[in-house]
Length: 163
Image (cartoon, rainbow, N blue to C red):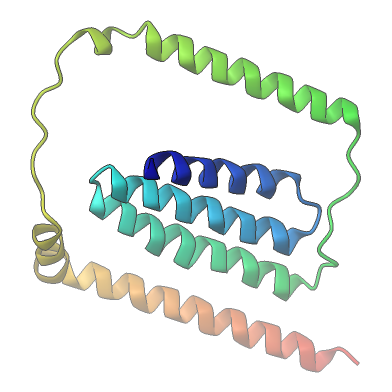
């Protein structure tokens, strides 16, 4: 039951992200789709992927998109689109979905039993990140912090130059 609710929430967010005309509303809908996908991962027992989805996509990519919109000072609306482009887009989506569904259904991988999956707990992954990969994790954190400070500095500098 929860899976159906979160799957519908994800699909609704994705459809809203591509159909809304306001750029900020589209990004907020995309965040909703990312959060719904993370909830689906968590329901399926993939805790690491679910939390990584929240951290990377909701916490980083979506916020980066919001900052980009705000820093470019765009009016936040898309251009007009015709009914023909929507029909062509729907046709392409149906063709791609049909091809993927047929490929998955006729795949030889479905005929064989799956090998047992290794059990990696969140504690083991956290220990590996904090012990074995501590230096690369800190370097990435410093790089992202420097990028954020640089973007804020550029935005403030451009704001001061404008009359």
